[in-house]
Length: 212
Image (cartoon, rainbow, N blue to C red):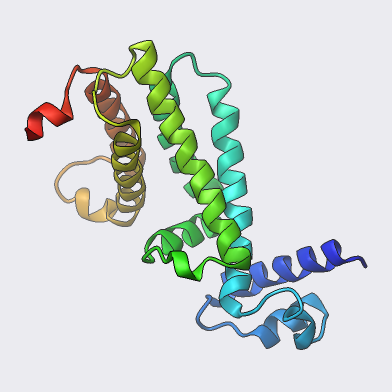
C-alpha cells in the first residue's frame, strides 16, 4: 500500500468513526483500529485529531465545489448561477448529510488564520474557492444586467453566503416549529427563499446610497 492509499484509508476510517460516534466521542485508537493500522501510523500523516477531521472536510468541500461547477455550466446568467449556488447547497444537505454536518460545524467556528496548517489549511483553501465561485457569479450577474443590486461583489456574495447557509440549516432544524404557524415544509420554505432572493437581486438597489 503506497502513501496515498494509506492516507485515504485512514481518512475513510475516520469518516466511519467520527460520523458514527461523533467527533468529540471518538478517539484516534478507534480510527486506527478501523483503518487496520497502528495509532502511531496516523500521526505520520496527521498532527492531531482535529487535523484528521479537517481532512474529511477537504473531501466534503471538494464534492460541494464540484456540484456548484456542474450546475454553473448549465446557467445562462450570473443571477442563475447565484440561485443555483443556493439550491445546490440545499440539495447537498440531503445527499451528503454527514459531510453537510461537518460544514455546519466548521462554519460555526471562528476563523483563525494562525491555525492554518496541513489539512486545516487545505480546508480553508477549498472554502476560498467556493466563496470565489460565488463572487464570480455575482460579478457576472452585475456585468450582464441580471443582478441589479449595486455594491461590491464580495460584499454581496458574503451576505448571500451567510443568508443561504442559515436558511438551509434553520428550515430543516425548525420545520416543526414553523409548521405551528403555517403548513409549509422545509422544501417549500427554501423554494420561497430562492424565489425571493432572485426577485430582490433583480432590482436596482445601490447599497452604498442607502448607507450614505
